Length: 87
Image 1 (spheres, rainbow, N blue to C red):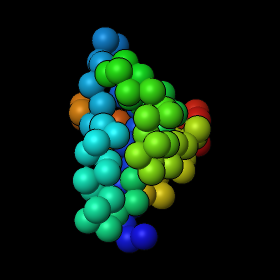
Image 2: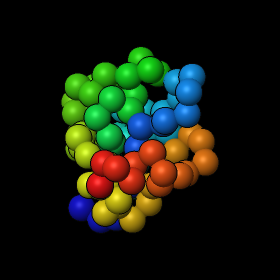
Image 3: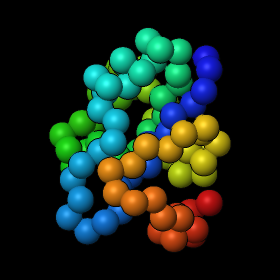
Image 4: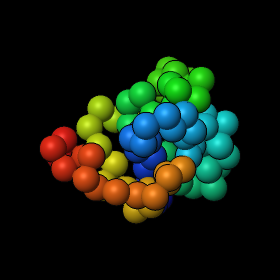
């Protein structure tokens, strides 16, 4: 695969959006990119981890794995603060 695109779980209170859906991940993969998503990132938006796995997305338990992505996709402004303790 080519460049990796990682999507972390949104951490803002009440934020239910996710920057990558299983369907959008399939479309992105068709362009030659590898998609990764943090465990539980799509749950609030109605997309369980298994839906991502079925779409070929690598579901990562730790955010540090997503940091190795070439691109990070988020719905809100990116911040490393909530993840500093998890790396």
